[in-house]
Image (cartoon, rainbow, N blue to C red; front, side, top):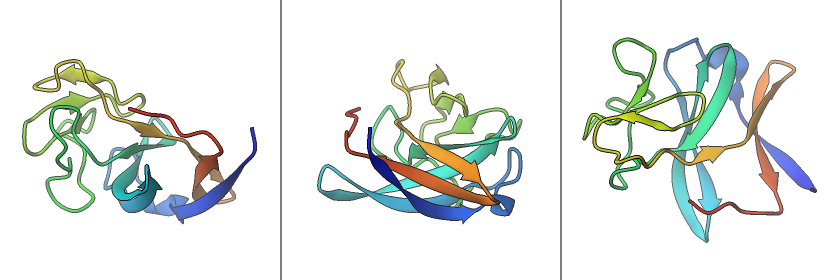
Length: 121
């Protein structure tokens, strides 16, 4: 599968269970908010949209983790998501998870991978 990469941020901007980095992507002809966080030593990226209703998750810009620093939390509904997979683990997400985005960390940078195929939610 052919593809390309887009720089999101320096890897040093992502602390384990800390602030995430917000960015935007073009998806289905629209600009959408997205974010990347570090969990278990790796970067993970998602659309910044709750699985329950389409509101952004962060309670302050870049703040996506709950107080335990183990889960991503929707600031509006309290829905909890696993930061590795985006799967719903509790709250009002009714089993609907976050939409993940492919990222890679290389040479001190985090890149969004673009492919010729677009996944739907």
